[in-house]
Image 1 (cartoon, helix red, strand yellow):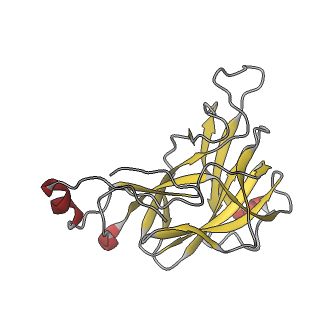
Image 2 (tube, rainbow, N blue to C red):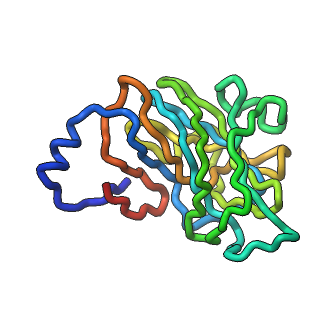
Image 3 (cartoon, helix red, strand yellow):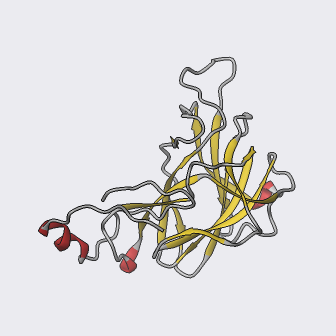
Length: 210
């Protein structure tokens, strides 16, 4: 685990000790050393504080800087309808709700984050796990990492943990994996503890300054 370092000003110390919900932070699983390419990844986010999942960045298999109008592509984000874990509903579309679609997202290719620029607004209450799906229905495969098992902690900070899930074709039977994903979130309600954006990065961290 590595957090970016820099000289701290008096203004920074004044901000650090404030309790202020509503400012966006990030946690991600890393974007290099990827060994899985699939159309769909399922995973859980476990919250220690009440959080709102606002947006995600992904890593796509191909780089597309100029879109082909005959072959548009998109990325989707789904979440469980009842707010529970993904476990037990991996290949059942009726258990999931589509909460965001990024059409013609400018994929930056392997090793780089592709921003989806979504407004997801998905609540994960403190002490719960909520299932998410990251998918590409247009066969622009999503990159990720193989995992030793499912429901294992993979990347975390004081607010949340991203847990391993499964990867597969579109709503098919999967195998243990975790997507390369950068989760943007905000603290909701009185549990806010930190107004400095931060990232806990694994397995190949890059610094993110406040």
